[in-house]
Image (tube, rainbow, N blue to C red; front, side, top):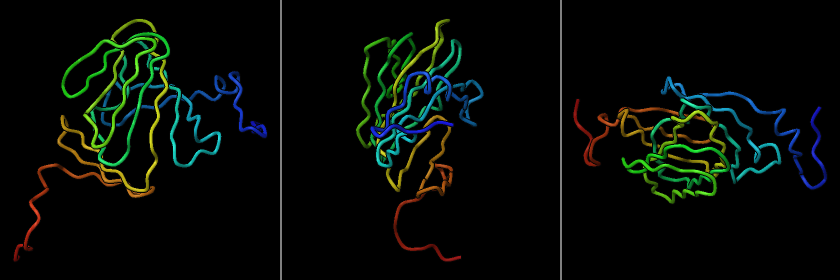
Amino acid sequence: MFEYSKNRLIKAEDIKNREAAFSHPWNKNSQIFGVELGVLTGLGRTGVNILRIPGGKESFVYHSHSNEEEWIYILAGKGIAEIDEEEYEVGPGDFMGFPIPSAAHHLRNPFNEDLLYLVGGEIRDLDIAEFPKLGKVMLRRGDDVQVYNQDDGREFGPLEES
């Protein structure tokens, strides 16, 4: 069983042994392996994860955040970052920051070598994420997550009579 040190230290071997696979249900090419480092050390307001995307796979879905800042730091390999509909090749030492309201972004690995990176950001009680290519908006309040079609929104004003 894994035990924390007094300093909340996670040794490299423990990190490697805890690596788990996950994917985004809206992207059939999403495949990520990683560890939620922040969760393991008890961080509640800051997310820090080490993630790996195999060659030919992608991270999640092209998205933006309205209430949580996010960042990505490339450790090894190379990939393609899509930021505000423009693509950039990224590699070791490259850093991306997404202050709120964030630019839409996504990371994919069309290369043979694994893409290894740190990703993190704020963990707030409320966040709104937009998925512009899918026409979806996600509202997360704590653990409650709801998804809406962007077309369902309307301007604020008087309620319409039925």
